[in-house]
Image (cartoon, rainbow, N blue to C red):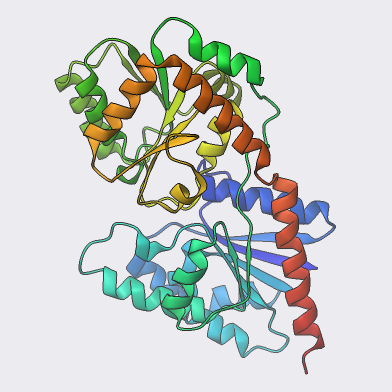
Length: 366
């Protein structure tokens, strides 16, 4: 098949959603399909709405003769009416949305929420199928669209890196004397809730732990500046290292040397960072308000904390600092949970088969 993929920006962006899209493109190409990426510039939500009137964009999506059109759901403001125009063209291909996280579930200004709900709902009603990273998204999408579309649930995986930590090393690492090594893996934006982690660590005092933060410091410069001031006011400068984006090999080394991932993101659909950490036997701290929470067992593979509850987060970290046998058990359990999770090959082949079925159904219909 000749497949188009509509995105904003570039597949090289260092976020979980773009990494998923990149892995999907590579998988489809290995299966013998031609995949062309159609990239639109990142713009404000209101400006993106004007794309629905663009004749040049309509031509880019129709002239190449795609057999199937994938759209990262982030592009929904550009497509909610454009898709209806596409449907009226001769030989219109099936349109499939890749949903990592619905826009309406994210923090929005009060004035913008009704607009986004209406636009996103109309967009979801305009597509022929959905690729979802978790099952919770299916019901949310159906409510927004007012109709349930064919869907495949294909979560991300963590086996893109060969490095792993042996089970015996995970247990031994937990029992070694020294600070609790905490890692935060994600770009610095408010929804990742690093500020909550810092508030929790301030409650623990200045000893017994260290925090390494790996992720872009430029995703939200104003937020990063606020975090630096927070660190300074709490006297945590010597315990918190904002390391920025690091090469993959360095990230793997850091995970292998750490004890726990503290990443209470909300909203969060299925963060690849959790899988990467659990591959190395790190129990995780996640938000109980995120879709990710459904994957973890509180007190066994993870600690789940309510949004803003820095006291509870501090209490969980203190337990791991003081009870290294608990840390060892949770680390081994996290690694075993990771081993039971689908691989990229298994997950993306589900998508491949789903796309073949949609294309076949479209070809056979009169």
